[in-house]
Length: 364
Image 1 (cartoon, rainbow, N blue to C red):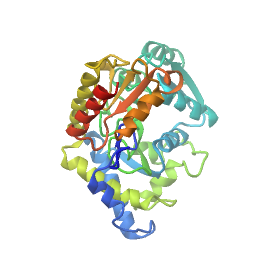
Image 2: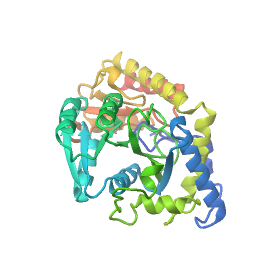
Image 3: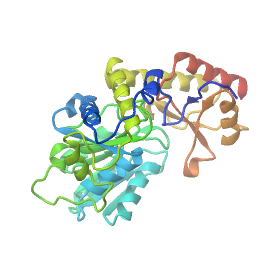
Image 4: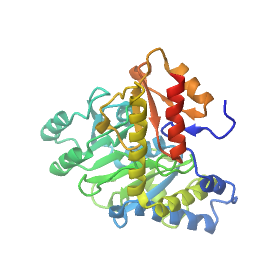
């Protein structure tokens, strides 16, 4: 096994730049001191600015935990108790939304497509036309189960047509894919620091329309939880503080990662880089007979799925690559014995890509 840092080709956590990694050791902070509040306000401002359209009408609420925590907090807080969610799923993460909503005692109508397939938009439109009880729509932007970038333009058009707010799992797409806030009728999205934003694990966030977080007319659903209550965080974080202990070292690194994103040209430049690298990986492996699971145009910019090569199960393939310093990712559920996944988020150089393809050339 190689001695240097492994090249993480799993869909988060990602390999950090030296600058972001060094930030984790810069300073010890107390989360109740004004300098940490200033840091939090700066992070929130930088998050709003990742997508220019979100800068004025949306607010970032920061949480200590993984992307799943942010997803659950979003639905726990922003889906009213007497609301009804229409959940489109074509992978493990869409189905997880349905599960976490129903476990909380709220209503969710699941429109499920087989995992290799696109979202079932026809069934979703039929339900929106026939069921006036539906109050919100949910989907996963980048379904990492297969690497499919879901058709949010079409789903967003339905949300606009039927006047249903969209709650979006953007955990693995924020900062690496296009997001259309107005066109998609986007009320809120959930995301994390340690995927396309290239920061350390430990912080996630919900970026929500400010009017969804401010008191107003209509039913304002209490979260039914303490740690997942976005309204409580939102009020406290207006001054930069949080109701509970935050991951302070991860916050310092997060600021550095957001500054790096801006310096590199923003999400547009990162998305272009991702698309270039993922295309090279698919082309290089394809030339060696490693077939893509989906058609190439279906993939998001930074995750691709492949059929396992003949004669290899996942464990064997994983171990061959791990000895060379690469960490890949298994398929999920019923795909576990059919596919593997390669993500190209994080600090990945051209030399890393060339060596990965060379390892496949020598190893299979």
